[in-house]
Length: 190
Image 1 (cartoon, rainbow, N blue to C red):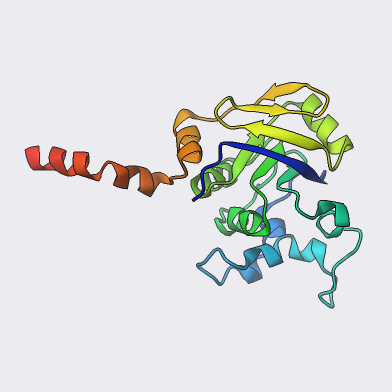
Image 2 (image 1 turned 120 degrees about the horizontal axis):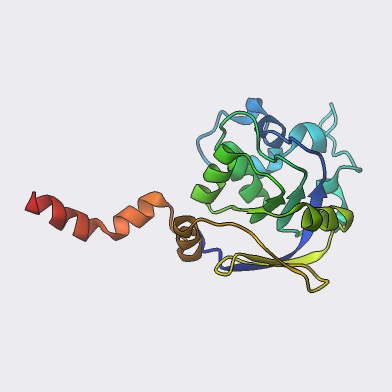
């Protein structure tokens, strides 16, 4: 996992509420246990028509979306079934963060464990972002802040352990392995 310290990027906006994990990565693509290649199937049923051709009107297919690393979504993003493939697909596509007024708990936890930053903001900040697709925003993980191009700064919650893991680029297993010597010394004392 790469450290996530700060991020400045233009945004892609999907304003729909209740975007579930089956819309993020349809179940038919869950046959892999690797993360690579899932980005091509991200929002597959929305991005492509029945022949597999890209839908030109879909947000991710617009030329302005190319290179954007932050996804702004409507309320309750990532709801539905527990699916670690959903954050994998977002990361493989190139997103580093998702912003919404609510992010489903299981999706949020899966995101944090895989290095995708879930950012929960207030309604006013969300409304501004949805109304301004392509806005250049910046995220500061250590401070837990989102800065809009207007100069407005919004705070977002991030639990201390999750913040540490993102800032250092380790997952839970990596965190434990960094403490292996101390764990083994403790176990020898028992």
